[in-house]
View 1 (cartoon, rainbow, N blue to C red):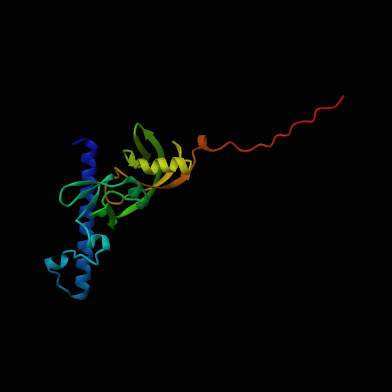
View 2 (view 1 turned 90 degrees about the horizontal axis):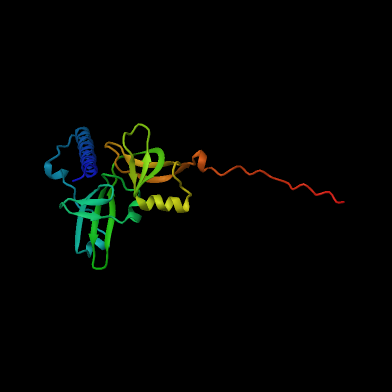
Length: 203
C-alpha cells in the first residue's frame, strides 16, 4: 500500500472515530436529560423507509467515501463516478450507500461527515489536481472531474484561489471543489484602454 493510500485510510479512520464519538456523546447527553437508559440494541441504526430502488435492488452495501471510492463495510471497494462525487461535493468520511439494481449502480450520500470550508491556490502536478492551503503541510487533492469542469466552464487556471471543503476532524488528503474565489494577478485580463486613431491630415 502506498504512503498516500495509508494516509487516506488513516484520515478515514479519524473521521469515522470522531463521528462515532460525537454521536455517542449526543445520545448520552439526551438520555441523561430525559432520564432514559440506553441499551446496546437501541444504539443500532435501523433502516428507515427504503427507496424504490432499494426495494427492488439485488444488493445494498453501506460504506465510507475515501476521496475517490466507497470503502464498503464488507471490505470491498466501489468506484464512485467522479461526476456524482463532484456534484455532491463528497469528502473523506461521508457515509454512503451503494445500490445494485438490474439495470444500474446507484450511489447515495446518507450521512455527511463534519466539514469546513477553506481556500488555497490551485495547482497541477502531473495527473494530480491540487489545492495548496496555508497551514496544511501537504497539498489537498481534488477530483479531476471537478478541476477540468471548472477550467472549462469557470475559467479556472493554475495560480487562482479556489474554495474547497475538507474534513473537519482529519488530515485533509482530499478536498471537494466549491468555487473559484479570485483570479491570480497573472491570470487577470489586462484592463481595457481605449485608443483612438489620430486623423491623418489631408493635403
